[in-house]
Length: 331
Ligand code: 13P
Ligand code: SF4
Image (cartoon, rainbow, N blue to C red; front, side, top):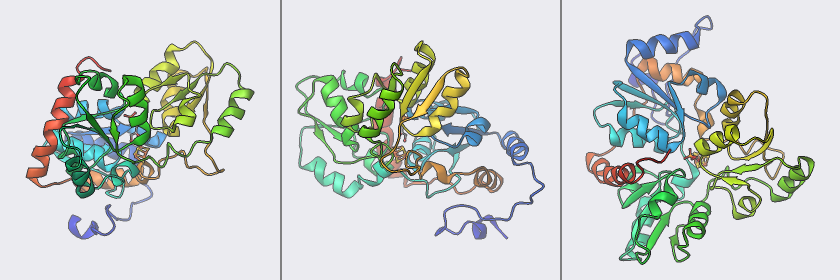
């Protein structure tokens, strides 16, 4: 069977029976060396994938790695907009995503045609979009930001210059408050994972662990951020866990991040902030579509691959380049 036949576009990942005697970790290692491939993974991937990665990071770190890599193939263990960003900055390289269905509720909440009408309705505004959006939405944007550099970049926009921020309303409101830009026009999108945390349960957890700092991602709702001792990107949250002398922490973001925090600090305790119901809703269902099996098959067959029209890529590249220029020194 050819790779094309194995990759039914309506399924979105390579389907092939894997011999149970195969050591998948060793095979992934062999294939990436043979093919000069690099494996980039986001903190929200399952721990087994994080441990296989050449680089683990937040959205800004991953975009920088993708821009700088000398590998011929980038395998992205993350979601579609992240792999797309890697392709935008690296058109000559093959960019692979183990499962093309690994989307993002924020990116889905901002379809490019609707966003184009929104932008047209607000002439004269600088359009700032969170990196969690599609290439087509990026193509309508002036500057891309991530949760690491958004405050820093917005601080460089003249105070009298009106701003549109998309697609995350929680991050937008947080940034508007932090930067004193209360007139920021904000698109009404939300992350299904970060809206899941229960304020009532968080208050209960804080009562049971007095003194445990609450570390929260700015995609969380305001009701959760109100209780946070520290707000930052996944990389900033990870760093804070090591730098803060507390021994117990409550963490309000996708629970995959706890893996690195625990590895960095084996003697500290990390408690995932509880979701509203008893579900595992604090695990991103999109990120978790990537599995070690799909990763192996993706490297083996070099599919599925990220592609996009060159015109869209070129238009989406400009706001990403502006982001990289405007966030020199941000880590
Ligand atoms: P960062 O990795 O930039 O903190 O963003 C979190 C996220 O939700 C990625 O989808
Ligand atoms: Fe998108 Fe939220 Fe998943 Fe991040 S955690 S990829 S913002 S749905």
